[in-house]
Image 1 (cartoon, rainbow, N blue to C red):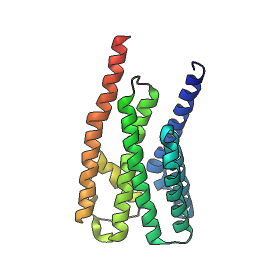
Image 2: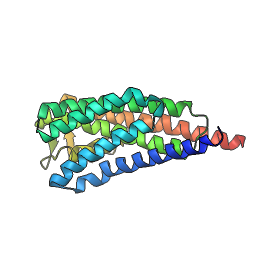
Image 3: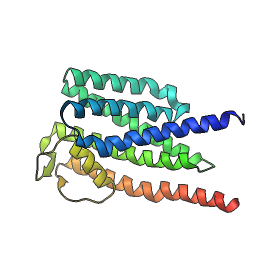
Length: 217
């Protein structure tokens, strides 16, 4: 058992770092691309995020495998055949998937007795997931009603809505994009509330556990 633990630890660390890199690319890099590179890059990165998200919660891998595979399959079918409503269905599947991953990851962090680098990376990935969930919901809202947001320049979905989602999640709010439809406003409130609650509760819990372990040592 003592020989297996380090290997499992390193594998888990690699999966979480890989997921962190993918989330970073999705949020910070993907918006710089254009045309086909933007479209295909989005699909590939999004699919890889699904795969590595499951790998970070191995004990629930089997339950989520078919669900994530269905969401990825629906996405690519709708992408290649340009089927708008099937794409919306894929995004709703994605939202449910990420919510499940967030809940399971938070429970996993709450049960953790030892806080290491993995737990802190997992906490950052969860924060990314909250913003991604928001960006998907905002994109769906925009596609159903392009007048749901007020902006000085025409919006580019989902790149501009990824930006708006994370700006709202951090409660920064530059004001260049404003939700005007009730659903868009509700999603914005949810994001702002979730961001503040997450930092106040989860991060403080991890820091408290880490400091408590250091004190005992």
